[in-house]
Length: 125
Figure 1 (cartoon, helix red, strand yellow):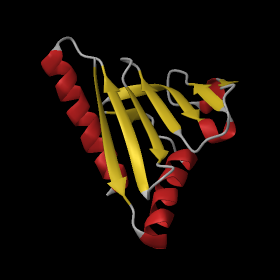
Figure 2: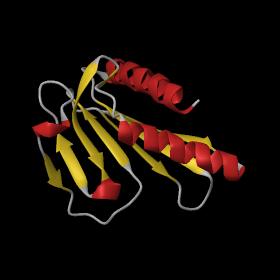
Figure 3: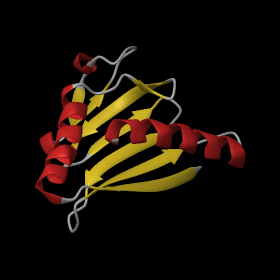
């Protein structure tokens, strides 16, 4: 297992609007896969729901309540157990992205983290 955190700064009103836009787009059209791996669970903590996805990325496959308070956080779990969590910082104009990956060995998990880092950078930049 390996984990990493990336922070993207968004200065000023336009920056905050861009950060909100990124999260809004991901909510409206969640990705079906990341780094060639199918997303098996998608959680939007702002609406208290975790979707358990079917064979494709079908939100109709079902959801369950998170049982947690409403917060502006998105989480994606991949079929290999890797995951990505996105949340705006509560104290600075920053979007924080937490990445976790599972690999067959240390190098494999490091490579998996790098693939996921590249994808989330494309979402943000």
